[in-house]
Image (cartoon, rainbow, N blue to C red):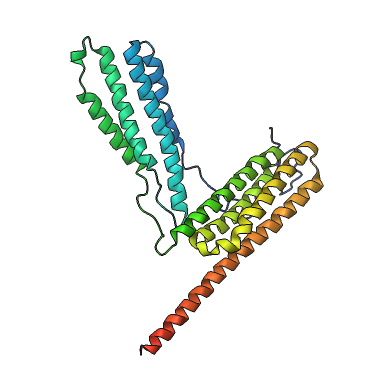
Length: 304
């Protein structure tokens, strides 16, 4: 859908400052971890497929398998980079269950080795002239270079000491569902065709994710925050879907104002809940410190 842009220097802008971004609009903005370096790895498989079509049955099959391995490696790398970004963004996180980046490096090496073997197989006049040494060396070099360029997956848990893993799993499931609601909100609001309201939704999502991270760091807070992560977010998603459908057809200013007011209320409530949980955590810490001081005094240790 085409989107209309306006601003200070637009024909109907009138020198208004409405086009200026709101304070905090880009707070918590997420950069796609799978950038051009990862996307370019999809390209080698394309010429390999076309070059293999005229190499006979065996050469074509080897080339297609090599292209499939390289494409699978690129897909695994993208997912591995995303998982690593999520791991780095959180204070408490488990290591990825499946080491995608490591397997991507291995598959890249296998793909390069098969591509080299196909070339030697096609150029050789007899099967005895085909050497496996060069393909193996190419595969090892490709694996090593891939690992050096993109690194390996996180190999250990972060900040999980003293945390109940059962509660952590419960939180992970609830947060995953909550992230799904936010994704559906983003998809729905795009139908409205208004960049300003899209930015407003993104700001609310940043506030909601602050609550997610707080609950993840202390799973005991899940009971108090569950309705925010389920009922309230589901209602926000449904309201976003209905608003987008109405606003895309009618451009109703009142509907826009009502929806913006809803986002304001939700953002204030989510932020207040996050602050309350942080204050409760601080109160718990104060209690623990006081209890420890009393025990030390009973043991005859004097604290100045």
